[in-house]
Image 1 (cartoon, one colour):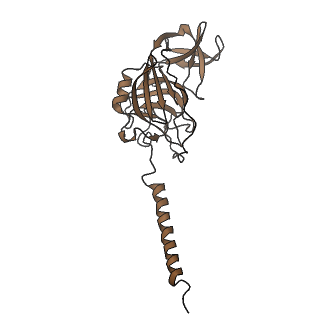
Image 2: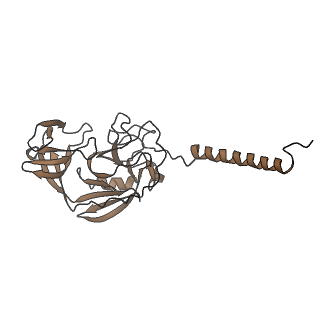
Image 3: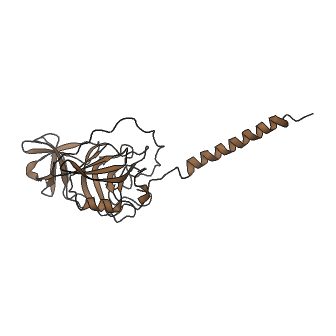
Amino acid sequence: MQSPLTGPRRRATLVAAAVAVVAALLVALVAFGPWSDADHDGPRAAAPSPTASTTAAPAPSPAASASTTPPAAVHAPATSTVAAVRGASVRVAARPGGDTTTTLSNPQPSGAPLVFLVVAQQGDWVQVQLAQRPNGSTGWVPTSAVALSADPYALVVTTATNTLDLYRAGKVVHSYPVATGTGGTPTPTGRFALTELLAPTNAGYGPYAYGTTAFSDVLNSFGGGPGQIGLHGTDDASSIGRDTSHGCIRMRNADISTLADLLPLGTPLQVR
């Protein structure tokens, strides 16, 4: 009697088995091979301060499909007002003249001076952006407690193109390539501000790291920090121009050094 797997049927079965093996190998390569790009913001070293990284121990979720939503219109004011705290602390209220909701120390725990971006003014009070969740939080501080000054600079990050545009007096003066967050750990969009400038001693962050008022929408903590977004250099120059971080904005070391010599704290930062 002829075996049921001889002849054409046997050949078809062998071909099908070979296809199944190849498919399994391809799945393994996608899961564990070079397509799985890990962020280097955190696993190599803890953040130099809570503001220098948004990395976290859990692995990023799979990249989301590209959004079809167009980016927000560019917000790059020709001039902004920043408020530097004069004393050792400042009280913050929910409304002008209201009760104190929190008191912030000056300098900050990192040693950086406490400086705010002003978003509104009413009488003897200014409304300022706060570095806290949820993103976009504001509070009111008395003008007697701060020194106000004008800032002609603004930063605009476009995640779709992984670029950072530097504005002065409302006009682009330079465009830099950057790395932004992955689909699973995106860089949050919105209007933020620079809060502190650090010189990290940890490997991985380059020569400078700006803290910002932005916080990750998906990572709540890492390395003792609250998942605060940083704008910093990198030891992995190949990551620039890609969606590869846990939310931080990475720049070439020479570029972040240029900004560190130029931008005051409180400078507005838009991510779109």
